[in-house]
Every structure is written in C-alpha cells, then in structure tokens.
Image (cartoon, rainbow, N blue to C red; front, top):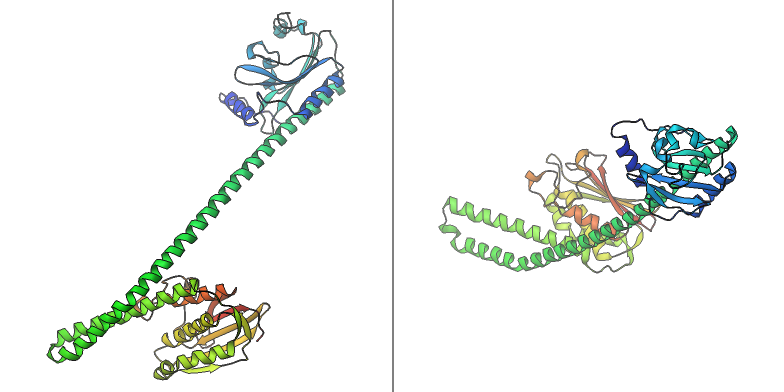
Length: 419
C-alpha cells in the first residue's frame, strides 16, 4: 500500500523533483503505457482515457485513448484540483459538483465532460506524479470493483515508470563505470610508464655513478697512502669518514642497479636446478660466511623449476647475505636453507637466528627503502624489494615470518617443481 508524502510547505518542490527524476515529460510514451491506458478505458467502459503528468505549469497528457492528447495549462486541469490528496475522484456527473462544474473541460470551453474518474499516480516515495483518468460525455457510475481495478492499473503505470527510471540509472552507471575503468586503465598505464621512466632514470644514474664513485674512492685511498702520515688525528678521522661514506654510496648504487635489473632485465626462462643454484650462491658467499663465522645448513632435495637462473641466483644470494648481515650480537650466525612442497609447487625457505623482524613490521619490509632499524645502517631497504620483484616475475610470492630460533624466515612460494 503506497503512502502519500505528507503535505509540507516544500512538498510541492519535492513532488516536482520526484516527477522530473523520471524524465517522462515531453518524451514519447512506451507502448506498454498506452496499452495500460487502453485497458483502463475498457475497465471503465468509456471511449476516452488519459495518462496525465502535472508539472509546475501544465498538464501533460503523456498518452491518450479516444482523443488526441496535448498539453494544457495546469489551471485548466480537472486532475490538478485534488490529485495531491492521493484519493480516487469519482464523479458520475461533474456538472453536479460545484468544485468541477466551472472547469473548462466541463462547461464546454474545452470539452463536455460528464462522467469523470481520476486515480492518482503515487511514486514509491509517496509523491503524486499525475493521474490515470477515464471520462465520458455521458453520465454514469462505476462499481467498487471497477474502481479497484483502475487503482491496480495506476500501480502498474508507476511500476513501469520505476522500471524505466532504474533502467536509465543502470545505463548511466554502466557508462560511468566504463568511463571510470577507462580512466583507471589510463592512470595505470601512465603509472607504469612513469615507473619505467623512473626506474630507467635510476638505473642510468646509478650506472653513471659507478665510475666516478670508484674513482673518488681510489683517489681517497691514494691520498691516505701518500699523505696519511702527515695528517693529524682530526684529518685522519675526516679521511676515514669520507671513505665510509663512499663505501656506503657504492653499496646503495649497486643495490639500485640490482633492483632495476630485477624488474627490467630480459627474463630467460629455462629449467633451473635449484640445488645447483644454492651451491653456486654458497660458493659466492664463502669468504663472507667464513669471516662472519656463520654456519649454513642446507636441506633438500631442491627441485628444478622454470625460471631465470641469473635472477634466481641473485634472489637466494640476497636472502642468505641478509641472514648473515642482520646477525644477533650475542651469537654466531646460523642459517638453514630448505624446501617443502605445497599445492602449487614448492616453498624454499631461508631461516636464521638473527635479530628477527617484529610482527608489526613484517607487512612493510618488502616496500622500497623500508628498514626495520635505520639506525643500524646495515642496509638500504632495497634488498627485499628486489627479492619480491624477482619472485613475482617467476609467478610466485614471498612471505616473512619468525624462525624457530627467534630470527627471521623468508619463504619463496614458487610454482612448479616438487621438493
């Protein structure tokens, strides 16, 4: 049962807003609406019927039966007299009702209406949009059952209005969604282009810095060898500090180059035996491992996977190097490299007994330049970002957790292969 909106000083403004929301005025009526009005004329057994919408200044006969529809002034409309009350008006002879007797549709100026019934069209929000009107030039009366059927037809008309409105909204949303998706695709494309340019710039700058940094480091070393004995304590301290700064800058440049290569180097996918990769990495890190007093335990067996051997070697070398670098001050580094199967392939793990990563930091350690302890100055926050890029290029993912010894365990979820 529809409820009419409560009449307030601003109710007419809201009613008109609701009417215009349907976008029906001055638009051709659907065949369905015309059919409903035709049925209404049959129910009332009259030759003429009309679907009327009433806006600010006029009555718009959206569709009619038995006569050509047209617009007329709202002040001339019979339906405008009481349609906002939300009640059916049933006049067997309009000439006998003093409110309607002088209306131009009754007194002959526009027509000679005698029998007249109007059923208000009430929106789901309770606003009267217009009427379903049946009329004749002869007097008659309708039964209660006929009036109920006209009320049913009025609800059908409003339902058709609502369906048309919802279809338009859905179409508008579809257009807006497509526009938003197009803008998003453009933004993503622009972001990718910007990232490519930025990474290309970083790679180029890093590459161009390698030689001058190496030259500066060499000149500083020669300066120390030739003039070191002539420097006082403060001068020697300055030279030593400059050397450390150059070393750190060279490490940063190398890390940036590794990151750029991990994302943009050609990807050469072949069958790679991870057992061989682990052995090569341990050989590369032997001097570093021995100087740190680290013990590296290798489990297995390791599978063969489809991937780029150079990138996979860089990946494992970064992880094992990190495990040694971020050692706990109270114990020698111990690193375990292992592999277990999972439902997509295998999980290669690198676990250590080092400082560990606090739980609230684990979600951000793969971000560029993210550092758990910046004050330690042990890294640049690029290594794990590089590792994530390599894993993603292999269609896998990387995760971090706590090792049984309280350190860190990095897990590489790689597709294919079986441990």
